[in-house]
Amino acid sequence: MKRLISSIGVCAIIACAFVPVRAADMAAAKQSYDTFCVKCHGTAGKGDGPAAATLATNPRNFTDCGTMGKISDDTLFNVIKNGGGSVGLSKDMQAWSTGFGDDEIHDLVAYVRSFCKK
Image (cartoon, rainbow, N blue to C red; front, side):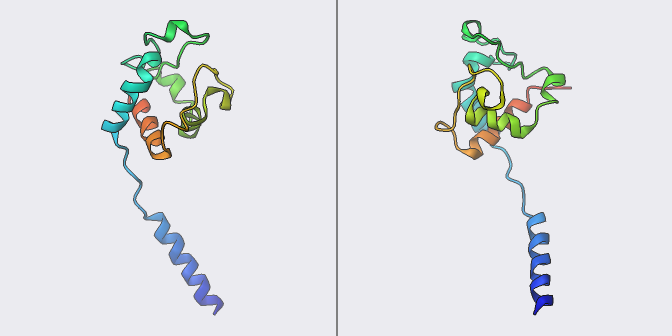
């Protein structure tokens, strides 16, 4: 019996390893970015949107590959979901937990990453 349970457990672990990763919906993410993020982060992701000058802290420049490479996807996710203050960054970055679902936030993270072109 222990052998059977152990075998089932191993099979479950192997099956989980082969579950396909959800592909980002970049078109929807771009639309969300253009609607909600451009005002601060700018159309090209350089942190130079029309509202950027009114903020106490400059918005993140997503084209700065050196800086962006040091920020994990989990951190970006948390900043978008819970606001900049949740990870010790600017409180000017508002939380979007009520505006976006987790899948949409993951898509936005992928879209933000697309601004860095090496």
